[in-house]
Structure formats: structure tokens, C-alpha cells
Amino acid sequence: MLTSTITSTSAVSSAAGAISMTTGTGLPEYGVLAVIALIALLSGKEILSASEKWNKDLSHSLNMGIGPLLVAFTAIVVFKVADIIYA
Picture 1 (cartoon, rainbow, N blue to C red):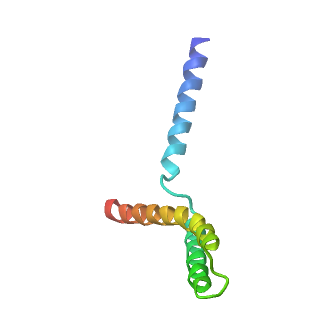
Picture 2: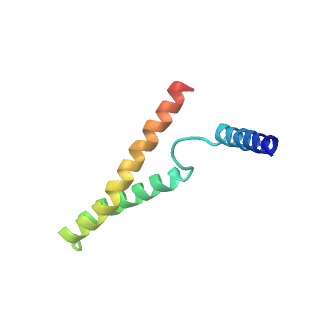
């Protein structure tokens, strides 16, 4: 009974070690989509600000999408630079 418990525990810990060595830390691989969305929202804001449909509500709506994407973009840049420096 005790032998099977030790064997199963060591098998689980070695499997967990194998998983942690192969999974990367950091941001998801879909960071490119976040950057494309940020570019699209910033471009839309720039284009719409020159039109007659521009108002305060539209500005706030676009800023609600741009703010989190700027934070994500900053995190992507920081992680990529750290990966280059420490790799």
C-alpha cells in the first residue's frame, strides 16, 4: 500500500515537472491580435475626429477600448524586451 502511494506521487511530480518545463511564461500568443486591434482603434479615432460625427460620447467609447489595449501592448513590449535581454 505504501509503495503504490510513493510510486504514484513520484509519477505525478515528474509529470508536473515535464509540463512546467515545456510551457512558457508570459503573454498569450495572440498578442498580435491585440496590437492589430489597437492600431485599428487608434486609426478609427484619428479618422473620426476629423469628421462631423465626432462627439464626446464617441471619444469616450473609443478610449474604453484603447486604454486596456495600450496596457496589453506595453506588457507585450516589456516581456519581449526582457526575453531578448535575459535569453
